[in-house]
Length: 240
Image 1 (spheres, rainbow, N blue to C red):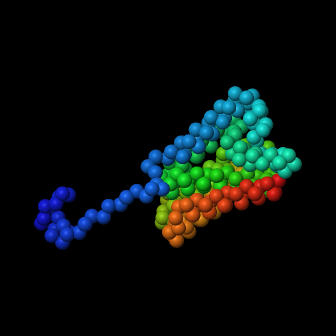
Image 2: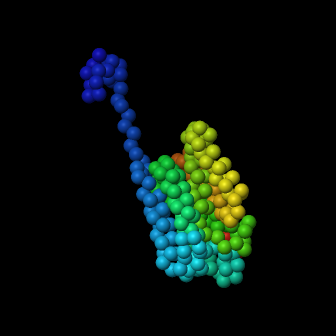
Image 3: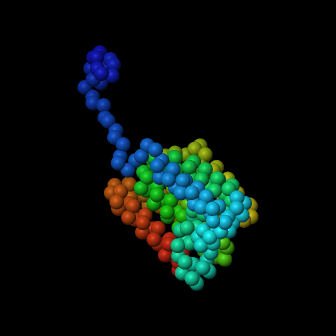
C-alpha cells in the first residue's frame, strides 16, 4: 500500500490521477433567476393592489392595461398584453400558488440547465401560454404566470428523462397529471395557458437537449430559444 493525500491506496491505484470535475460556466448553485422571477411576480401583484385591485377581485389600472384579451390585441394592437398577462394575478391565492409552483420547479431546473436557459424557457413558456389562450379562449380575459410555470414543468420533465430519471419515481409525472386534472376539472382556469405553456416548455426543453448533444455553444442554444419565443409571440399577434 502507498500513502497518499487521500489515504492508503494500492500501488496501481496510487498511479491514477483523480479527475476533477469543474462546474460549467452556465451552471449556477443558487436559483437566482427563479428568485428574481418570483419576486417580480409578487411585486407586480402588490402594484395591482396599489392601483385598485382587491385581494379577491380584479380591477385597477395595471390589470386593465395588462390583462390578455384577444380583441384588444387584435383590434387595438396592444401586443404587450401577450407578455404582461404572465405577471398579473387575480387574487392572493392565485399569486401564492403560482409563486410556489415556479419556486418548486425552478430550484430543480435552473441549477441543472443554467440561469440563461432557464429564463429563455420561462419566456417561451409564457408566450406559448398566451398563444394557447388566444387559440382556445380568444374572448376570455386572462392573467397569471401558470402558463410559464407549466412550461417549466415540461422542460424539467424533458431534462429529467434525458438524464435517465424515471418520471414516475421522481414524482414529476404525478405532479403533471394532478395539475392537468385540476386544470380540466375546475371552472375558471385558463386551459389554453396551461396546455400552451406546457407544450412550449417541452419544445424548448427538447431544443436544448438536442443542441447539447450536438455540443452547440450556449450562445447558439439561447439564440434558437429566442427565435422560438419570437415565433410564439408573432403567432399570438397573428391569431389575435
